[in-house]
Image (cartoon, rainbow, N blue to C red; front, side, top):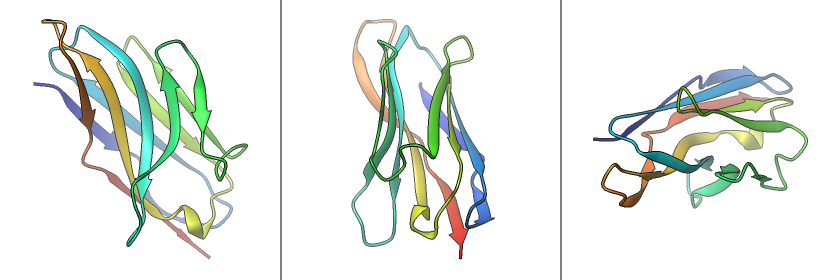
Length: 120
């Protein structure tokens, strides 16, 4: 069974930084892309940053220049370095991964989320 476990959320003042981590575990043949989404109260879940299997990164316009996504393929981890945080970045952040299992079936997985709160 595949699991994604996030860590690194918390409370920070505006202008501060946080680093989120997500570790994939379980029976995995390959990871075909990992990313971060967020959901603020009353809002839809939205893409924050994506790291594709081809090494391409995509960011939502609201975080470009402030957030950086990176991957450790050996450890099966994805990170999100968040700098110059703003109160509007407050949300639950979810790790997402498209994973191929040993039977070559491809599934999408989600973590349980980690709360990020930015105070003004």
